Length: 249
Image (cartoon, one colour):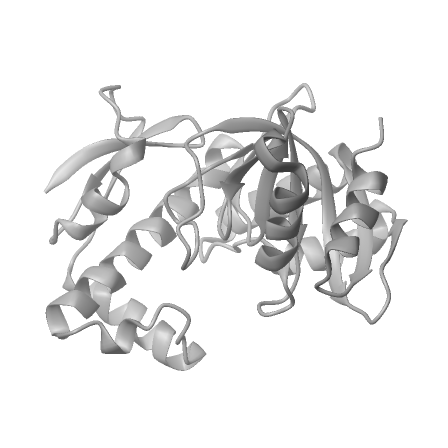
């Protein structure tokens, strides 16, 4: 099965064994000629199974999806995005782990270790801002950097267990590194302070050249957007504190 989809504005042809990926990515389908193509085979699914088992990945409940075929469909979806992420750095794009939303046409990205509360904090922003806020991607957005310094974040179908995303491209203004805290406080930080956390949350390709390109892209990202460190609880006040600092002109 094959069709072409837009990832970070780039048309990518996807060839798969199962139909599930095409249903999953339906909102991103395009009639444009593909820039490149990726394909999956049984060995790719074996690789993803081993990776998921090693990570003890229970987030999406894939081990109890109701049968081996459902598990294989899910594993193939992981393989597809991994293969796309391996190619993207050659087009100045990389995959990043975080929750991104847009407010009045400007994007903000929250990132942290899994379980810290990225999605919860993004939800608090949406509850506070109502229709002004639009979810870009709640898990694995793509970030594209142009030579002129422009940083754009893109929705993708790989958007977390709650399936929160939109097929949009939004200029990225700021990234916030989340930490749990009893009290809510936020501070501006330097690219040097932020870089280790940004690098950890970026997808690091297995291909050495692609990985080197990703490293350079993350460095450029750290210099191209505003950077913050937030200590927060999960109360509505946390959203007010972070928005007042990050949304300031």
